Image 1 (cartoon, rainbow, N blue to C red):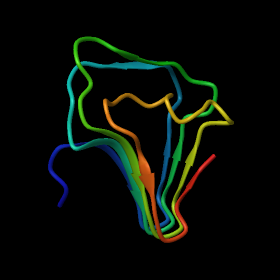
Image 2: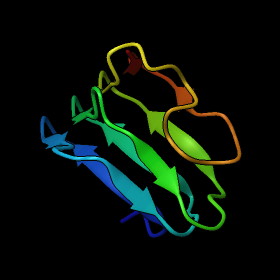
Image 3: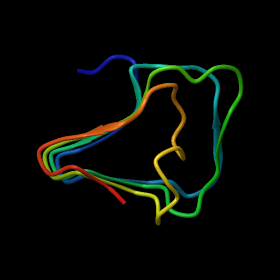
Image 4: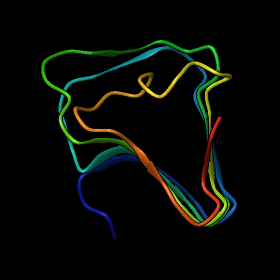
Length: 90
């Protein structure tokens, strides 16, 4: 449905990052969370090999990206992430 997204957490689903990882290219957004989906990347390191273009994240409809307070620049991208309709970046 959303071509160009790296990771999508949707419809009450949970994406739990279990280890550090590296990305090698850009896209529309690194993470899209919607419909009460959760992307959990607490205490992980995300590195970039090459360029990471696109939005850092897009969070809508009560979804959550959980970073344990790592800050809005944890996720790769060259433009700020956005939240709407109850989306939370924590």
